[in-house]
Amino acid sequence: MPEALSTLGAVLTVFSVVQYVQQDDVDVYVNGQHVAQQEQIQRKEKTRGEQILDDAIARREQILLANQRVISQTQLR
Image (cartoon, rainbow, N blue to C red; front, side):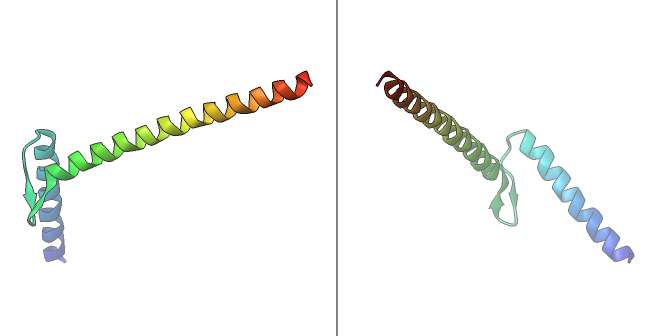
């Protein structure tokens, strides 16, 4: 049991250090994987998600305007 706690403590320490270093925009490698690069990918994904949302809102507005025009034209007849 003490070995498990020791291992868990070591893992948590590594993650804490990685999080601290990530905040300083320093290149960090864990098991050969570039940790700082993952943060950049997450930012790009967030930006892409926001773009998709903006596009969807713009498309929704176009559809609503088109529907409104059709309703107006129908009422004029």
